[in-house]
Image (cartoon, rainbow, N blue to C red):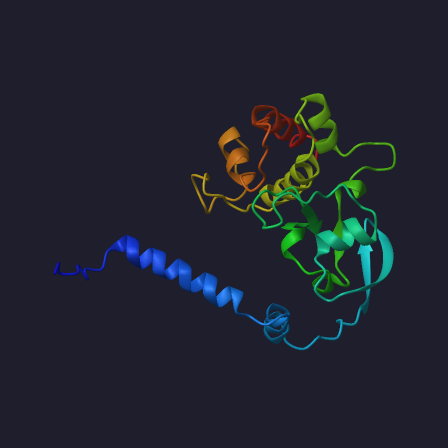
Length: 218
């Protein structure tokens, strides 16, 4: 009588596991999947109530009722129709959503709207003086500092804030002397200070030229 080979092979283990899974799946009672999903979902939660908030944006007061989790960017775009500020990465990495808060540039996608009640908020829509463009805006037009234009509002707001930082004597990683006060705005300085704003069209040479010219007027 021939001796039976009882050695376990990898193929046998895989076939056995597949057969077991099929057997268990076919043996589930009707509705068991839905019951399991309901158990893991947990109890339904009540919606978070909206909170009244007041903002001063581009020198105009706005009263809104917002979910406290609403970002400043979503409040501007979705609740006030100020769509100049763009939602690019939504992670604070591209700078397309840059606005000015009390003169300082911030990524509005990373900031909750509720944090900015009482602050002076300026978006790209509020930079011009009626029909007269802000010098940075005019320089971007003159130097063709954009292609698709998606990043341009954030680039312009960031440039306006950056020029204020230079006038205040803030150094950058490209500054040669950290204690000498206002530094010369070289191309290297501009590139370093604007490095948080990404242009996927790579219009950087024109952007640098526009900011360099605008620095002489603002």
